[in-house]
Length: 200
Image 1 (cartoon, rainbow, N blue to C red):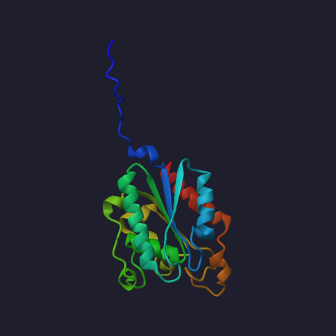
Image 2 (cartoon, rainbow, N blue to C red; image 1 turned 90 degrees about the vertical axis):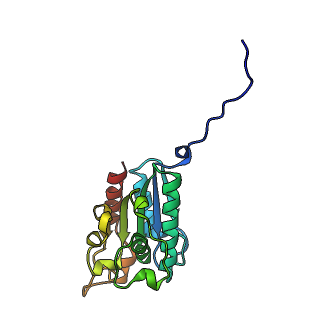
């Protein structure tokens, strides 16, 4: 029997290196680079519910640069959707990071955030189709209307959580800053349950 001595090399598939689920999360104002405390808690809870989970921390100056964060988030979502088309995307943000998510996804706000912060890279509809769940915490848009009513095609994939007494996302005489900075486990778990139900 003759053999050619040639090895057959199969092309690598994108799915081989792609996670089942990826979470992109934008931290809150003045939090150090990374996911922030709310993002870490959310991802930790979601890991208990979802297999093969990857995480991306949105890169931006978490003081005022909402537009920069939205551009980074959008660019990453587009890259992931193109390179890993079977990966199910989860998007989240807390406080200023929630504004980053709102901006990237085109949610109307109290001001034209995109124009104000030089945002120029909205998530295209075909990339948006890969997003299975969107979760925001302490989102100022909640003061004007539930984000579910503002998010257009994303509406049924959105969960916007506002802790009781959080002055950023609700009005009230008993509001405290601690209610904004410390979201209870019950809300974190609610968010994780919501996302898991849409990616499993």
